[in-house]
Image 1 (cartoon, rainbow, N blue to C red):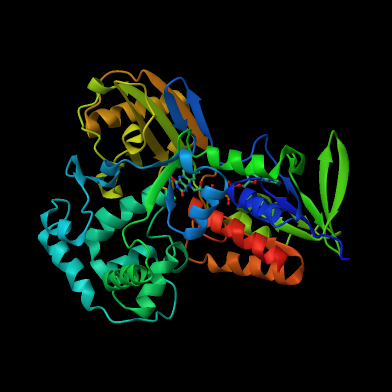
Image 2 (cartoon, rainbow, N blue to C red):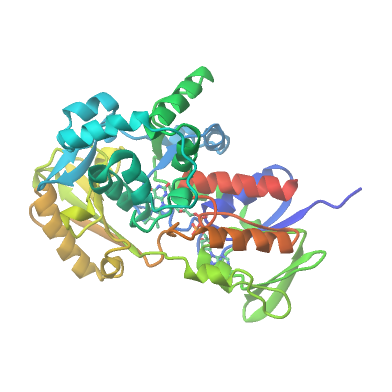
Length: 456
Ligand SMILES: Cc1cc2nc3c(=O)[nH]c(=O)nc-3n(C[C@H](O)[C@H](O)[C@H](O)COP(=O)(O)OP(=O)(O)OC[C@H]3O[C@@H](n4cnc5c(N)ncnc54)[C@H](O)[C@@H]3O)c2cc1C
C-alpha cells in the first residue's frame, strides 16, 4: 500500500487556507505554515459593539460555482450576506460632486457622468474588429483604443484606483485584465464580447447578470476563520515564517521554533506567499534564491480608515456602494466605501460607517501616514465630497504597507520566473495573488488549483 501524500502549504492567507482545506477534504495529510500570529492575510474583520469593521477587503464577487459550493460546504450559507440592492449604485466624483455611474447601456444615455461625445464613442466601440496585438500595452492605452480619453479618465482610472490602488498607465492590459485582452482577440469589441458572454451564460442556465457581491454576517473574516477551523489547529503552525526549503526526493521545510531550527519532510510544497517572502526564500543548499527578481514587484501602501458618524452628520444619502476618485479631480483619497449601506449590521442604529481608502501608487505618503494625519485628510475630504460635519463618533485605522501587487507592464518576466522555478523543482507549486489575480475570488480559485495540481 502506498504511503499517503504529505503536503506543506506555506502562507496562511486565503490562497493557502483554501489549498490546505481542499487537500484535507481529499484525505491528504497537510501542514500549513503561517509566518504571522493569525491566518487570513488582510482578510480580517473586527467587531466592537454594533460596529463591524473590515481591516482590508470589504466584499467578494461570488462569480463561480466552485466558490458558491465552497461557501455551502463550509456551512456559511446562513451567515452569507448579500450586498443591499442600493449597492448597485456606484458614484464617481466629477465637477465637484459624486455622480452616479451608469449601471447599464441604456443608463449611459441618461447619465450626467460622461459627455455626449464620450457616449457616442462608447457605442462606436461595437464596430471594432478582433485584434491580435504584437505586444502588451498599458491598460490606459488599451481602453483608450476602444473607448477614448474620457472613459479612461472618468471610468477606468477611478475603477483601477478602487481595485489595484494603481495607475492604468503603468498596469499591463494583458496581465491586469486578462479577460479583456482575450475578448479583444476573439471578438474585437469589448461590449460585444460581454454581450456574447452573457448570452452564453444564459444558454448554460447560469445567471447572466453581474456577479453577486457578498460578505458574511460577522464580516469577511468568517471565511478564513472557518477554513482554519476545518483544517484544524493541530495542522496549522502560526508564527512559523519559512525562509528556506531543501529540495530532494522529499522536500525539507526549515523553520525556527523557540530559537531551534526544525526541518520537516514533505512530498509536495505549495507556496502561497506575497512577492517579498517568495523573493527571499532560499531553495537549495547553496542559498539559491530562484525567485529573487520578484522583489522588484511594486506593492503600494494603502490605509483603510473606518469612520462612524451619526446619520444626521452626513448630508449625502449614501445610497450606493461608495464613491471613487478619478486622478484628474486631484482629491486626496482613493475612494470612500459606504460600508453601512453596502451590508447590514455594520453600524449601530441611527449611525453610518464609511471606509476611507488612502494611499496607492500616487499617494504612497498617505498609505504610510499616522492616524492623526489621515484623520485630518479624511475629514476635510468627507466634508467636501459627502457633506460630512463634525467629528466621527468611532474610528479604526488599518494600514497595509505592501497592499496589492501591481501587474504592471513587464509583469510577464515574474510569471516566467515562477514557471521556471516550478519546472526546475518537481513537487514545488506556486500560486496566489502574485500569479493568479488579486481578487479574493481569484485567490480562492488559485488555492483550489494548487490543491488539484498537488494531487495530480
Ligand atoms: C486594503 C485591501 C483591500 C482589498 N480589497 C479587496 C476587496 O474588496 N475584494 C477583493 O476581492 N480583494 C481585495 N483585496 C485583495 C485581496 O485581499 C488579496 O489579494 C488576497 O487576500 C491575497 O491572498 P493571498 O492568500 O494570495 O495572500 P496573502 O493574504 O498576502 O497571504 C499570504 C500569507 O503568507 C504569510 N507569510 C508571509 N511570509 C511568510 C513566510 N515566510 N512563511 C510563512 N508565511 C508567510 C502572510 O503572513 C500571509 O498570511 C484587498 C487587499 C487589500 C490589502
